[in-house]
Image (cartoon, rainbow, N blue to C red; front, side, top):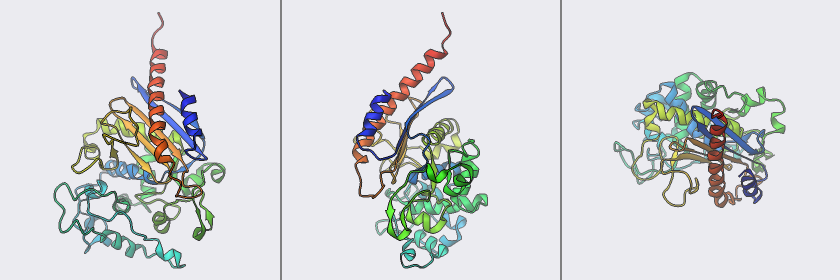
Length: 356
């Protein structure tokens, strides 16, 4: 099975790849990884589930209006929108804005003005106050950028990345395998020698390595982290996070808002559900599976019924984001990893069984 995973990797997913799988055997998680397991990757939007989990564990009320939590949102179209709708991509916000644009002209970004602009970026098809379940879902980095600010201010952190490190990473004892680039660079020897490079960006001085690829996160939080991007990690770190999330979401009713089904599509709150047809999760995971993708070429999927987690970390944007081969490769790799996870669990169960 591992040979099959490695074959899929060799078919051109990326120049640096870490693929991993985990399964629960009884109460014990069994994990295995192939590829560059000691490499740190820019996790991109895998930061979003961490933001949602940090909000859930921090005690921040997801029913609170954004304007109460983020003063820059006051007077904007989003001031009365509950935090939960931002996390569920149903706040009516545009998908993206180039808040980093002043950097291209050699100017500084006014963070307060950028946050107000993001909060005011209401789509034309989402007028007025949102209905109870929110507007039609549109995947939005802006909603998570704002949610990350709300989280950071709630816990007294410098930014969302530091808040995630305090509330999630430290709680799970994963400081050496998950974190912002600044935190990992301080903790891990030769971090810059073991982090996968991302895109060649001339205005940032060439190939980006060891710093967040996302331009808005870079503009607003630098070597820290925003609510939508900024966390780095290894495949072992992502698997451990996924296992912890699967346990928490299955046992804590206070987190039920994260994975409950919502109208209008598969987008949940912090995660995406598995589409009935054509899902990047592949074909083997069950209908209740949920996960997330990252723009840099990362992914994690969790199947609560099979008690499995699979992760694929790549640097597919190196040297350019125009490389989209991973779209075709992901489902097959996830299928192979899922089968490997089930085999791991079976091996662990056999190994734990009493002799005779």
